[in-house]
Length: 179
Image (tube, rainbow, N blue to C red; front, side):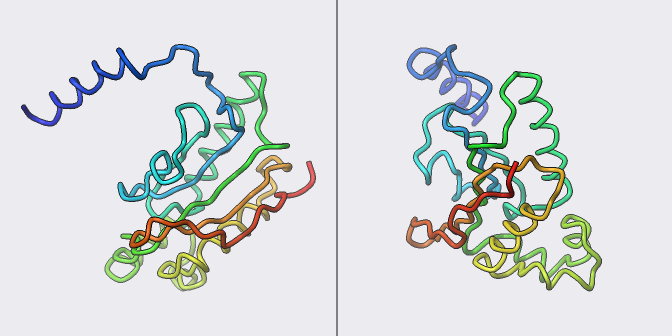
């Protein structure tokens, strides 16, 4: 059986025992998580989230970059159209991790990484690419200073350690800015 067949089989099992047509488009815990695409750091697993509790946005490094900000703007429009705007009372969690593959981009493709992050080549070092503890604080600050995001989010910065499985709060919850 190839992996696509395995996935189809797992989906058939899901439809029988895990599917819920009652899930809502908006997360039940009013939480959005920004995380890395690394399969070792799936927020659904490492935070033991139940289906529908959080909206998870994943990109390389779990970093705040121009594409992420565009995605969040679109989600803001979707939420307003659904009659449940995001912002006040919502949690916005930036989840980065140790031993991230983005380090390889920093060392082997810095120009590509600069473009991805939306900065000039000589500003890449300012983003602490190889230090998730500094990087998560930088990204929380980038969110806090972005006037296009709705205020009222409680934003938190976490780092997941891939060797221990534990998260550490680097930036405690703080309101993005008054709404």
